[in-house]
Length: 553
Ligand SMILES: *[C@@H]1O[C@H](CO)[C@@H](O)[C@H](O)[C@H]1NC(C)=O
Ligand SMILES: *[C@@H]1O[C@H](CO)[C@@H](O)[C@H](O)[C@H]1NC(C)=O
Ligand SMILES: *[C@@H]1O[C@H](CO)[C@@H](O)[C@H](O)[C@H]1NC(C)=O
Ligand SMILES: *[C@@H]1O[C@H](CO)[C@@H](O)[C@H](O)[C@H]1NC(C)=O
Ligand SMILES: *[C@@H]1O[C@H](CO)[C@@H](O)[C@H](O)[C@H]1NC(C)=O
Ligand SMILES: *[C@@H]1O[C@H](CO)[C@@H](O)[C@H](O)[C@H]1NC(C)=O
Ligand SMILES: *[C@@H]1O[C@H](CO)[C@@H](O)[C@H](O)[C@H]1NC(C)=O
Ligand SMILES: *[C@@H]1O[C@H](CO)[C@@H](O)[C@H](O)[C@H]1NC(C)=O
Ligand SMILES: *[C@@H]1O[C@H](CO)[C@@H](O)[C@H](O)[C@H]1NC(C)=O
Image (cartoon, rainbow, N blue to C red; front, side, top):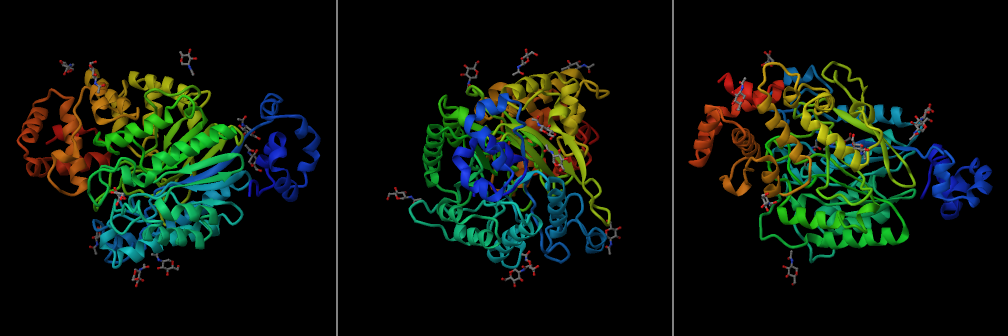
C-alpha cells in the first residue's frame, strides 16, 4: 500500500526508507533493487544532503459543485436561460457546472500529473448549490458524490484517489450534518462512504473510520493524512443546538493521532473543507470561536505542531441557496506558529459559481518530510467556449517570489502584502484564478485611490489571513465583525451581502458609510439589501471595488 508506482517518488523513498517499506517497493519496482545497498547505509537526512531530489507530486481538486440538472428546469443556475446554457456545455461563469467540466478537469490533471503524481486529493463539496431544489436531495446528493468519485477513478486509473473530505454541500441540505456522537455510525456518512468506496475513491480501512464522524486517518507513502470533518464547527451548521465541547470527539482524536505520529516520527497533513478563521468576502466568522481556540491549541502545540507539515482546505462555506462567494486561492497563518510550521493553503474551486476561473492544482512535496515544495495552479479561462481547455496558471513560488513555502516564509510575504507593492499585486492578480477581482484595486499602483483607504482594505485582508476569532480579528483590523446572531434569519447569501456592506462601512468615513452604519444600528437589514444588494453583486461580478460600485449609486 505504501508505494504503487515505479516513479520518481518511489526511488526517492527507497533511498531513505527501504528498511521500512522494503517489500512493497521491491515487489513493484525492480529498479529499486539497484539502490538497496545505498539505502541500507543511509537515512532520510543524509539522502537529503546527498542531493537526492526528494520531490513527489499530487493532484488537488476541490469544490466541483457538480450539477446533473444543468440543462433542465431544476438547474442551480436559475439566473441563466436554457438556450444560453446549451451553448455552454462545460459551464458558464456564475453557475455551478455540469459533470462535463469536472471530467475535463480530471482528464487534464491526469495528463499533466501523469508522469509524476502519486495520488489525487479532493477537499470537499462534490454537490451543487440549491440542494433542496433537486427532486430528491438525499438520493441525488449521494448520487453526485458517487458520480464524481467514479469520474475520478476513470481518469486516474493507476493512482490512489483520496476522497472523503466532506463539504457543507455534501448533504441533503446545505450545512446539515446530524451530530450522532453517541451512535456507532451515522447513516448519512455510511451512505456517502459506501458511495465513494464502491467507486474506488476510498480504502476499506478509511471507510471503517469514516462512518462514525466522517473524519479519518490514511497514509500515502511516508505521509500521514488526517482528514477532518469541519462542517460541524461552522457557524452555519445545522441543525442548530447547544454547542458540544468536542463534537464526535474529533479534537481528542486529532490530538491523539498527532501524538502517535510524533512518537513514530511521522509527518502529517491535515486536510479539511472549511478552514477556521475569517473569510475574506464579508469578513465574517467561519467556525465558532470556541472551536477555533480548541483547534489552535492543538496545531500550535510546541510538541505536536512541528509534525504538521501542511494544512490544506477547500473552500470555504457555500450556503443557503447561494453559498459564500469565496472559492479563492489563499493562504493562512497561525497566530503563534510552532517552530518549522508548515503552510496553510485554501484552494480555489472548480466551480466558477463565484466568479473565478475553474482551477485545480499540482502540488510538489517532499515525500519524507511532507514539506510542500511548490503549488502550481492550472485554470480554464475559456471553459465557456464550446471546448474547455486547460492552461498553466501560475507557480506559487515564482509568483510570490519566495524561496520556499514554510509558514515563516509566508509570514514574511504577508507582511509585504500590507505594503501594497509588487508582492501584493502578484498575490491579488491570482486571488480569483486570474479573474478580475476587487483586491487588485487596493494596490499602491491602482489609479485614483486614496492611499489611506487602500491601506485600510489591505489591513482588513491581511488581518483575515491569520487564523483567529472574530474578536481578535476586530482588534487587528480595527473593524467590527457582523455576527450571525445579529441578523434575523435569512438566506446566507443575503447575510454575507450585509456582512460585506458592514465591514466596508466600518473602515470608511464617507457619508455613505455613515448611512449604512445608521441603517445597520437600527436593524434596517431589509432596507440595506433593497438599496445595495444589486451593487454588491455587481461589484463581485465585475471585480470593481465596493467603493466605486457604491459611489456610482
Ligand atoms: C526535482 O527535480 C525536478 C526535475 O526532475 C525539478 O523540476 C524540481 O524542481 C526538483 N525539485 C526540487 C525541490 O529541487
Ligand atoms: C437567453 O438569455 C440570453 C442572454 O441573456 C438572451 O440573449 C436570450 O434572448 C435568452 N433567450 C431566451 C429564449 O429567453
Ligand atoms: C515529471 O515527468 C516529466 C515527464 O516524464 C519529466 O520530464 C519531469 O522531469 C518530471 N518532473 C519531476 C519533478 O520529476
Ligand atoms: C434524483 O433522484 C431521483 C429519485 O431517486 C431519481 O429518480 C433521479 O433520476 C435522480 N436524478 C439524477 C440526475 O440522478
Ligand atoms: C450519475 O451517472 C449516471 C450514469 O452516467 C447518470 O445516469 C446519472 O444521472 C448521474 N446522476 C447524478 C446525480 O449525477
Ligand atoms: C451523548 O450521550 C451523553 C451521555 O449520555 C450526553 O450527555 C450527550 O448529550 C449525548 N450527545 C448527543 C449528541 O446526543
Ligand atoms: C524574512 O525576511 C527577512 C527580511 O527580508 C529575512 O531576513 C528573513 O530571512 C526572512 N525569513 C524567512 C523565513 O524567509
Ligand atoms: C484620503 O483619505 C483621508 C481619510 O479618509 C482623508 O482625510 C484625505 O483627505 C483623503 N485624501 C484625498 C487626496 O482624497
Ligand atoms: C485587543 O487589544 C487590546 C489593546 O491592545 C487588548 O487590551 C485586548 O486584550 C485585545 N483583545 C483581544 C481579544 O486580543
